Every structure is written in C-alpha cells, then in structure tokens.
Image (cartoon, rainbow, N blue to C red):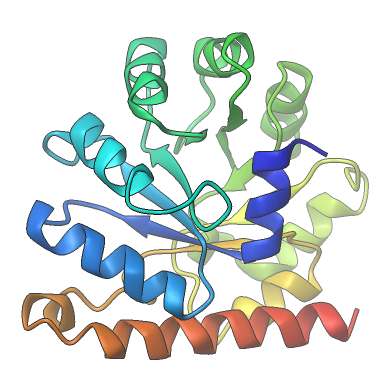
Amino acid sequence: MNETLSRIVDSGVVAVLRGVPADQLIGIAEALHAGGVTAVEITADTPEVADLIGDVAGSFDDDEVVVGTGTVLDSETARTTLMAGAEFVVSPSLHEDVIETCNRYGAVSAPGVMTPTEAVRGYEAGADFVKVFPAKTVGPAHVGAMKGPLGQIPMMPTGGVGPDNAADFIDAGAFAVGAGGALVDYDAAARADYEAITETAREFTRIVEEARADE
C-alpha cells in the first residue's frame, strides 16, 4: 500500500479544514494530532492555501501528520498544492486530469463520487480511493450497497459524517471517514480552546477504532 494512503488508513479520520484563519491553523492541527487525527485536508478554496499547506507540513515530523488538499477541481491547483507540500488530493467530483497529475507526482488522489459508475471510472483512471460525497444525502446503506460489487475500491464517506454515524459508515465498508464541522469547532478555535477540538478528535478516533474492531 502507498505510504501516504497507509497513514490515512492509520488515522481513520480525515479532518477537512475549510477557510481556517492562518493564525488558528497550526493550533487546530496540533489539537487534532493530540486527539489521534493525523490526516488533515485543507481545502483549496482557503485563501493562501499553498502557504498554509507548507506551514502545516513543516510543523510536524514526516510520520506525525499527513497533509492534503481538498476541493481540488483542476490539475493546476493539484500541482500547485503538491509542490507546496500536499501529499494527497481530494475532490468533491470526478476530474481525471487531477488524478493524472497526482499519479505523475506520486501523490494519492481521491475523486468525489456518488454512483458505482463514477467510482469505477475514478479507480480505473488511477485514483487511490474514492470520496463518497455528500455522504449525508445517501447514508451508510449506500456505501454498503456500492461496496458489495466494488469491494476492491477503498471508499471514504465525507459530508455529514459525525460521531453519531461514523461507526455505521465503517460498518458499511468505509476504510476511513472525512469530517469537517462535526470534528472541528471553529468557535472553540477562535477562543483558543483547542482542548475541545482534541476531545472531539479523541471521540471520533475511538468510534472508528471500535467499529473496526467489531468487523
């Protein structure tokens, strides 16, 4: 297994950070790391995203946190953020040029999919896993139904995943889950209460670990 993908699997939870102020980003990443979430995705629509990716990647040892870019819609953005230090690239939709760019630079790619056809197209194009998005629209049963005939394709549901349903998605066959607002309390970050974020991260990782143990 690709080392970056292996580290995402180890984390079990990918934190999706969108529009985080630069002065809070490192504190949030450290809080997540303390809670066991060691995969961080900074969305490409965040101002100065390349600089922020470099800052986070440079704040941890290589084996501590794996940093990626989310909401990537084109190959230019993929390349720019990879050059800044991103190790994986996630999209909300299927863009084969993004997958091609990631393969060219040896980076992990994950297109967003909703249907079995999209999942197969993305995987055949060279994606390492697919992001089932938005997960809240279809729920764990949809992931389970797709994993039936497509068990070879790693799937990560994102969008509406929280502590109340993360285990259900793992039980359905997800190898990890992506979480944004349900994982990171931006109000807590604004008042520098990073321990609150750490506690939520611990809860998320515990839920995922227990769900995996029950498989």
